[in-house]
Image (cartoon, rainbow, N blue to C red; front, side):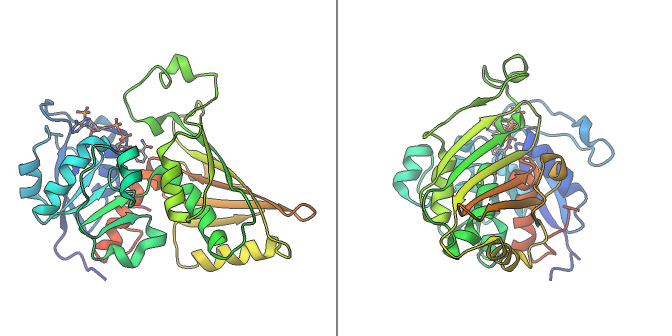
Length: 332
Ligand SMILES: NC(=O)c1ccc[n+]([C@@H]2O[C@H](COP(=O)([O-])OP(=O)(O)OC[C@H]3O[C@@H](n4cnc5c(N)ncnc54)[C@H](OP(=O)(O)O)[C@@H]3O)[C@@H](O)[C@H]2O)c1
């Protein structure tokens, strides 16, 4: 275990975005990390972050990749995927360990990557998909951690133990609801207040890149339908599957308890169904379910805070494992 006698010098690029501010909030209270650089977009004026006053008071500077590499050991990229696609390999080439929150390097299949992230170059060697609970051991040696996406985190944590155990018979349907911060801080016609307040809409049906990420990790097809709901943060996914004959709610409970016995941020709530308010501002993923014994239908509910377990918190959790810290540092 890392004793944090010498703090790891960390940098955050995209520090003025929703995920970037959450990263700074976690890293400012992390005993093993020293924030050495925080940067916004190229050419931007220095800014302070009022939400972090007295937690972290330094200015955020314009992006300067040379300065970022020179002052840090590890870098968190909370950037648009096109910017990460360019910057992550440059930092890795200079020996920095990179935790990328974008999707640029998450897809291992070259065709899928080209389809969903056309700006991404050939990835550096040993990229690890950054879902901590699934890839703990691989994180230790990875120069580039492609942190899991927000929707995929909630879906994969809920489904992977069941798929691995052979407890899914037939199609998987993921009905997902996202708070508006999932789309980042720049409003669009779909996400600005007067469009989404008082409404609820489906989008990206059969056309969302997170479906490819979920299928990559589960190894089976899914029907994934995201919805935008008028709350600021939090994701709730309602997942419909059918259990094979002879399987019951007790088998489902045993699969989850076995899978997450050593995972401090997965809370198995069983019959008590999770709610966004229970996970907001935390790094927890809550998973609950109900089974209809007559029809063998299983309905799973999986909830996260998209900016914490779905983004910054997960990245810090990956950083903790990668650098040999207690997985919970900066996250409690
Ligand atoms: N929001 C979520 O729930 C969530 C969850 C998981 C993963 N992610 C991923 O995390 C990344 C950041 O998301 P976000 O929601 O925090 O976005 P955001 O709120 O839009 O923030 C984007 C950040 O990137 C900077 N930036 C914009 N264009 C840039 C460029 N061309 N080069 C360098 N910096 C640039 C912005 O700086 P300025 O302030 O100077 O413009 C800002 O600091 C994205 O890849 C996103 O897909 C987000």
